[in-house]
Amino acid sequence: MAETEKYSLGQLLIEKGIITVQQLEMALAEQGKTGELLGAVLMRLGFVDTESIYMPILAEQIGIPYLNLANIQIRKEVIDRIPAHFVKAL
Image (cartoon, rainbow, N blue to C red; front, side, top):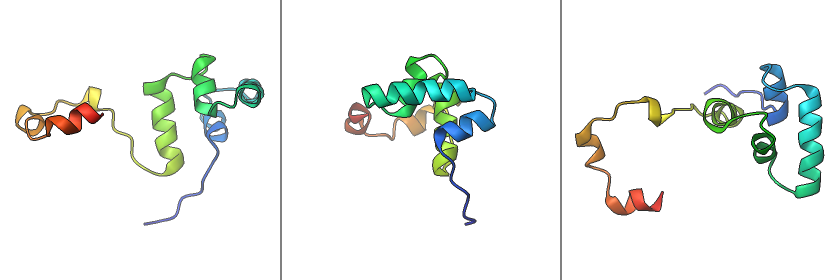
């Protein structure tokens, strides 16, 4: 597996044109006040949304594929194989 270069969340969002440098600076200042995770601050300020922007970028940052199960049809026989206690834990 090839090693990928790691980028900060803010850096990735700026490079992809999702947020501006000013928005990142605003979010970092807010993060300094509240102690929240940067992603939570960016979402709370309305700069990114969870499903279409934040989660895919976060997956890219840590080097794993992102899969939104809301967009995938899962066969009933597959769903039936998932133990109820596992689903409740989620």
